[in-house]
Image 1 (tube, rainbow, N blue to C red):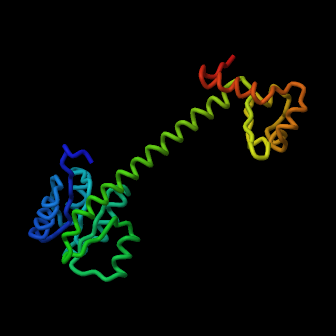
Image 2 (tube, rainbow, N blue to C red):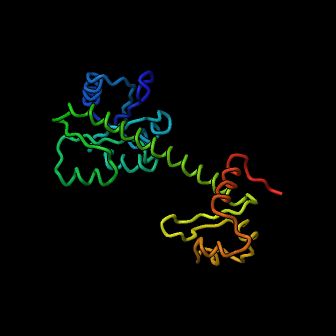
Image 3 (cartoon, helix red, strand yellow):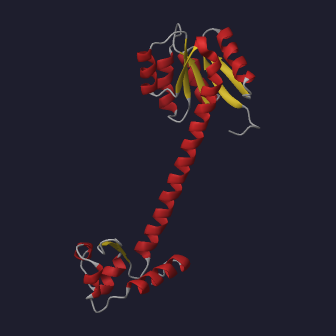
Length: 221
């Protein structure tokens, strides 16, 4: 979280003093944030869109609304929005159901001192998830770029399992250059089988050609 930008917290709470107490406890632990409070489903839905909270802290029971419904609506809006349930009393089964339903954490009102740590923990978890997502996106983009080069180049390329010597993939140029009709003909064999082809380049020569393609880009004629 950017410490220069206040965190946006959405309180789902019908008792104003309870929301004020939660806010005071959070600020006491050094959290810098802005907040708004809602206690109806309509106001909650509007706040999700207009206020765009970074954390939702919801009471479990409200007269016209409840925390589990707020959780469902939050998940529909964004599965990556931290949602923390706060309740006056909760048994173990209810707590487990809240977590199973998608809540990031739950706090019993008699132990409100734990709320700041629940919020900080949720933010760290969100940050970790974002880092993992970015890494996965970068990996997919790298694989896509690699696959484009693999398929577009006119250089013959094969990939093999170093342990067994079996061919695991070849590009179209490889098939054309060595007269194969389909990949299945090649994938059924080993490097030794390819070596019997009089047109076959050595592995080191193919690796050198592929490295040149990676550096210079595919040469399409």
